[in-house]
Length: 279
Image 1 (cartoon, rainbow, N blue to C red):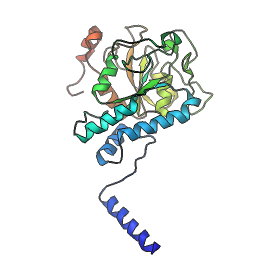
Image 2: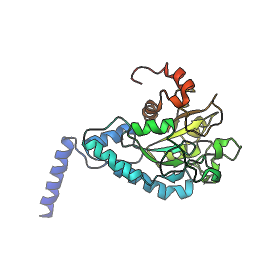
Image 3: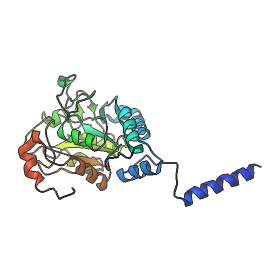
């Protein structure tokens, strides 16, 4: 009897495989394209994805110090994305995808925006940063804030250290330099603590931690992405860009955040002329 049951189970699994149906999803190293495929074939929900990353953060962040704060509304945002998808209202490649933002990028929600400094803890911002607003319009789930070198290394602190977040560590060799200032964004992407992340750069702050943590970082041309709502160093060089595990993921994020912003009008108006039609 047991043998017959095993044969029946094997037959069902074979039929499901032949039909291209699966009920499992590989969370580790998942790309944006794989996530969207999981959403479409029913093997994944945004809520399940957020729970996975929250669990990763709970397990790994005490050692790596890559995430400075988790969004208490993340699961509600994920549930809303799942409901929208069921109604055929998915808005693109980042819909329902959890993203971590560097802690110098403002979000008008329950999260703090402190640039890693205790001096800004509890401060209230008036609005989302331009890139955060674009991510929300794209349907992304704001998972939380990534650690950074305090004040984006403006004060010449150790790479990855801030008063709020402590010392961010390289996930491959804990004693190695994680680089900065977007240390937490690079480490979180490498350690599967978020699907995708955002960093900022004035001079090397995206590219260096991306290199040191073996992820893909893009430092966009100044003005291609809005700096409105980002704690500044210099408008001549500051830029916001993706830090992700793959090139395709970085492209999806960049597509979502580029464009004109009236609150950073001079720079984004000029750079927007060079965005190809359709992104």
